[in-house]
Length: 266
Image (cartoon, rainbow, N blue to C red; front, side, top):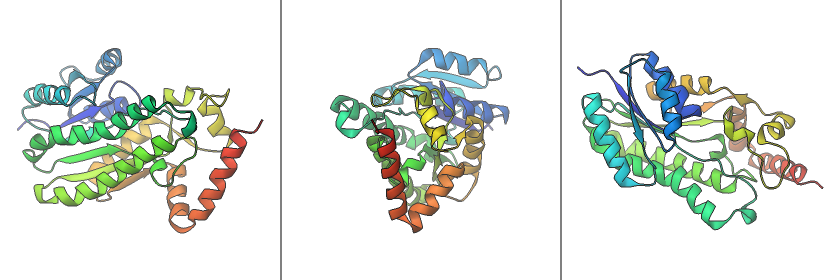
């Protein structure tokens, strides 16, 4: 029997790379997919020889999805135990300042890419007993985050899709899960937004938020696909926000307004 196989989008860096390394170390065959060819090369070099296939794709393009999964299936012996929809971008800033074209791009990658992946992978998933879809969500899918309105909205969409499809796909024997981490230690935190001279990393630290190593998220991904919870919260920030958003939503709103005011203070 072919070894178990996982197909990861956004595998050229960050969470995707960490998950690829983690699963490869456990003997899985790993499909690496990303629009960044150099990033894929770097991830491939971290994995044992013969443990991965490499696929340059734009998750917005369904034809590219089909071609990549066809090539992956030939390399994996026809198995797809886990589809990890992880590719995403972290565009932020005030809604009124974001160009509509960037909003379209954000939605198309962060949510449309997930939808495209599920459509493309469903035949392989149905043919693999005990298969799982794992989607990268976010703690920002628990309560809308000022300054990340559209990003947050895409993660709400991923959360809703995950919950609905876990019910719909039960008849196929497919589980659907999501990761909901807080702020992850990736290069995205080093970006400087248009409304601040500080990188996001410095602003988050100033507000007392935890920044989570990608290795912890990789461990959570393993737990998510082997567990019964639909959503896997990762980090203190995510757990705290989940509790407060559930029982004290007005408190979340007040704190968010204070942070937004501080971030835009002259």
